[in-house]
Length: 379
Ligand SMILES: [Mg+2]
Image: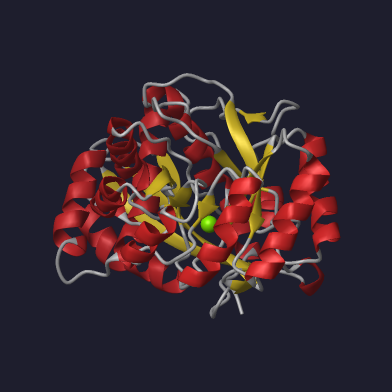
């Protein structure tokens, strides 16, 4: 199980203009991911996914240089030891902060893939869980800024597929956001859980104006009205209404989730396994949230690796919340690269893959079909 090689592959694809969605962080023009391959002396190979961090080349470079040097020679089954070594030698002092947490997430995920392959089990089983249906909501880069009637029409699509929950993009003007939420609630009726995400684009005043309408529309959560460090604005906004606040996709490691949970303003916890420190760290965050009786609702992107890892984790913790399904119109990472993708059943549930490891594979040669595109992903 000795690690003999670690290689990171930054990959991208452009989003065609007619399929581009606009949300609170801009219009999506491309999508990226960083895939991490870890090889062992025995020949077992694991794959993990690191989020692109809006600079996929930089994330891959960190993994291919410093992290590779720190990790090669260690035991692949020693996930806690590898995490701790990277933490001490790169993250804790003079490191790249979020960049390091993101890069190490893919390494950790690849090690869990190896561990589960080594025992011949699907990952959920190794994590102590069982295969069970996880409630899914329709999310990803979709349901963006468009006229309310067109949005209501788009929202009917996933509901017809089986989804019982979906997520609308807010962070436009309060008037536009309100019109969209009201139109979709009217079109879908009361049985569908409507979730919302402002992608950190709100001012305090925007939140004050929108919250009562979200309450009236029985919205399930308001996600990231503000950036993660705006603790005071989260505290203020909690007093504006009953709709729960959600965040976590831009929080890194248990040390940042510690404050999120202790503050008590954000009650929907959304770690991204490809950002926050991998599966090892997400298990710790889930345990932390469990002590407060809060559920884990992972943010997911972009390939089947992180999607599968998220479902395995949700099947293995005592506080699973929603799984975020990517219903983006255009995602060849999902449709062309990986041999497995999450599919929702007619009751709105998804299930983990059953093959050993993460349960997702692809032909390494196909990565050449997705050459790195430098520059911003949203404009
Ligand atoms: Mg979000």
